[in-house]
Length: 227
Ligand code: C5P
Image 1 (cartoon, protein in one colour):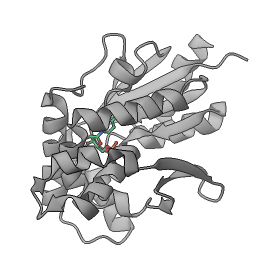
Image 2: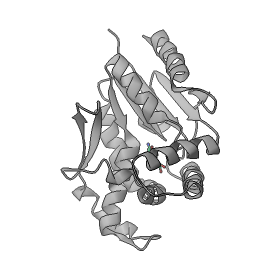
Image 3: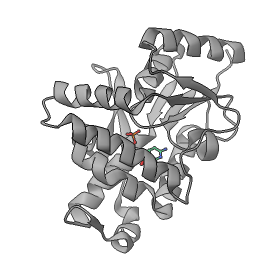
Image 4: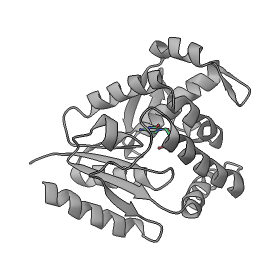
């Protein structure tokens, strides 16, 4: 049967990955979480090229990009792929608030984007892929058959992210999460290279007041129309 490319973009914590995982499972597609890739590069930068919280030695990071090897390995028990950085499982480490506070700065660097976009295009070469991020429908797969753009109020998004982090035992404050969600969106939307914007042909879904089931059904009907 026919397989398509599905691009999911949108603001942070709009539930892109939850939806993408459900789609991948139902249609037997490959799911690629591109945010995890930017987070893994950020973890590497944090380990080697960050001085304090705010200063990043960009030149050093750029000249060492070739030493960063990223891969996804499917975890049968979890039912999704985990992020590996230079052979090490970093799935847990990349989801902290600390990495969330640094990632937009790293993701704004063109050399970083160039490397990751090339890898993403390679992973999606064959179709039958659902990829989520910020520039999938605009830059990575401008010809994707289906493009979705997810939005929700900042408060709803921060509430979801807060719950996620608290559930895994992190000690974070709601105020810090809300600030981070809005700050990341601001940096991601205003950067020069591949800013977060809705592709002209993307279907926008505001899920502030939508459950996951309702969203999933709506998206499945959009997919089925393309098959
Ligand atoms: O999707 P997630 O929230 O994990 O993404 C983390 C960050 O990675 C985003 O805030 C953004 O700065 C960056 N990113 C990006 N382009 C993508 C995916 C993520 O710039 N395609």
